[in-house]
Figure 1 (cartoon, helix red, strand yellow):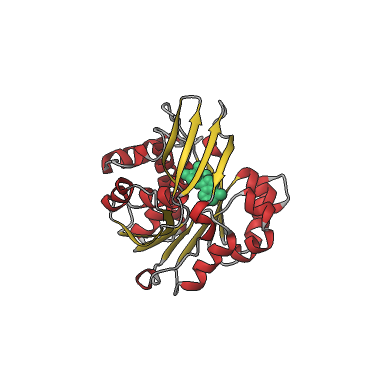
Figure 2: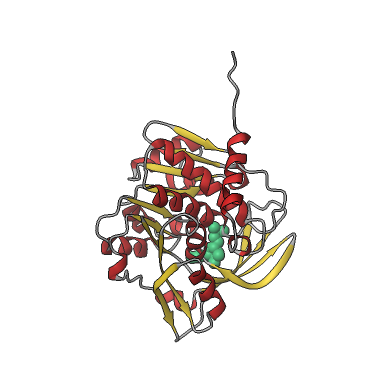
Length: 305
Ligand code: AMP
């Protein structure tokens, strides 16, 4: 099944306790597309880049057979630039700079050939633009949306309008508390699911993730990554791995959703092992499935009697 990915395509400047890069390929749509391309038959990207976007970055996306028909090239300005700094607690980062550039005028236009996509990934962009994407597609089976505290605080009405239309919302623990205005995560999850999405994933940074559906709560373990260099893109890689897996299997059963959450965790664990998307360029099938098995064994609980 094909997957439609909408989000930012960016250059990032990143500083962590382990090093620094001034400019590296980034953006939510980039990470979601790269990670989902290991599973989904067809990944269709929608985004915008500026006149400075490098040919080698186009070639990287093409090498993963990501369809770029929906990637707008706006020669009137530069590509979106974001920079951030992480401290020893890699769950927290400070945004140092955000230059919207051509992203400020981004108007997601969905090409005709993308409109029948059954799986849709709405990366973290302005909620009204995410809604605009949904207005243009035909009859998707499964829509997943990411957002952030900036939109929860800044555009709550537009956010709630878009949330109503999605099947799965993916947010982190502090965002869930803020959106629900409730400190207890389990109660917050119920409140958020009442806003529309039948399923909710709450990411807890390096501590794993929780999946809430009608009948159950599933707790995904965190992988004990030893070589963690840069958490940038981990959340988007989680979304890409998860949705790529669902698009590949075309199976939305509760059982397969659990697999998808682990596949998301697998791709996020690779993402953090190098700066930017470096580690996501040349993964092998064996590496991916071996790590999936490691995840399984991490949380195998023996019977008590
Ligand atoms: P993550 O670490 O998964 O939350 O995502 C990091 C990516 O989000 C980086 O590659 C940034 O380029 C991108 N990003 C940061 N701020 C924004 C924003 N306001 N809108 C869209 N993308 C952003």
